[in-house]
Image 1 (cartoon, one colour):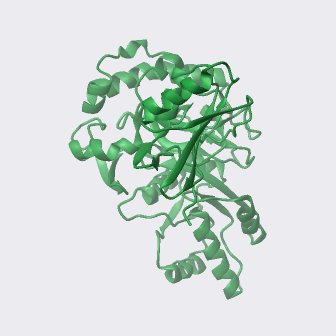
Image 2 (tube, helix red, strand yellow):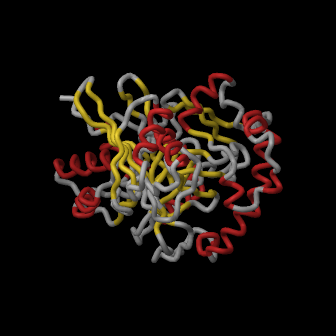
Image 3 (spheres, rainbow, N blue to C red):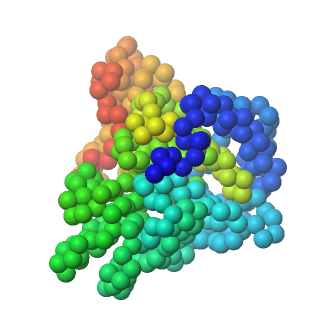
Length: 410
C-alpha cells in the first residue's frame, strides 16, 4: 500500500515553506486584482512585497464572523469570489446564513488527502453521512472520494433504519461523518447481533474523544481518525495513523494568533487559527476561523513533514456581556498593547446576575503604579470598572482563553 498521497507530503519543511512564500505574492495579487472585497481591503498593499510571514502578518484579518454582514451587502459571496462565467458549480448555505462557493475543479475541497491518510483507497465503498442538504459537508467528502476512486453511498443525515439496511446490503468498507452517529450505527448492529462491516472511519464536526475512539475500536473498527475542515476553506488538517496531532493541508499557510487580534503567537501557544489559502477561486487571505488550536513541535512519525496542530481546542470568540456592555478579546489585546510590561493576561468575569465583577489577571511584576494604570486603561477601553491582579509568569493556562466567564446563572 502506498504510504503517502504524493511527494508534497514528504518535502523538507524548508522546501515547503519556500514554495508557499513564493506562491503568496501571486495569490495576494489575485485577490486584490480580481475580487471586489480584497480590492478594498488590500488597496494600499504591494502584493510583490508580501514574501515573508512577517509581511503577511501585516495584512488585515478577515473574520468568519464578519462574512454574514459583508455578504448581505454584496450577495452572494460578499465580493470574495473571483468572478468568471461558469466558474461556480454549486452554492451552499451554512448557518448565518453564510454562502459558500464550489468551483469547477476536481477535489475542490482537497479532502482526498485526509481520507488517503486514513487508509481509504480506490475500490472502497464509502458510507458518507454528512449532510447533502444546502450545506457542503456531504459534497466536500464526495469530491475527495471521487479523486481516490471510491464508490460513495450518499447517506446524508436521518433515515437511520434505511441507512442500516443499506449497510447490511452493500457492506461499505469506510465511513465519513460524525463520531456520535458512527456510535449509533455500531450500537444498532450490536442490537441486531451482527458484526459491523465498516473497518475504517474519518470523523469530523464533533468531538472524537479518546474513550469514544477506544470504544469504536473495541467494537470492530480498525481505524478511527479525525478530520478538521470548514465550508470556507475545505480541508485544514487531518490525523494520520500515527495519531500524533493533525497534519496541515499542503495548500494553506497557517498562523496562530492571539484571539481578537492578528498578532501571531509562538509555536505551542494556544490561539486562533488564521488561514491564507492558495485557492485561486476563493482566495481568502488571513481568514480567521474563530477556532482555537496550537502548533505541535516536530514532524509526524508517519513521515508527513507538514506542520502539526493539536486539533480543535474551542472557540476564539469569547465575547461576554457585562453590565449591559460587550467585552471581547480585542479589548484585552488593546490593554496589553498599552502595557507591554504584561506578558499575558486573562479577564475573569465573576458574580451573580446584575452583580458582575471583572478582574484582569496579569503575568507581570507589581511595579509602582502599574495596577492603577492598567485599571484606568480597562475603564478607557471597556467603559467598565475592573480590578487588577498580578500572577507569576507562566501561571495562566495555555488554552487560548483571554476572557473567562465564571458567573453563576443558577
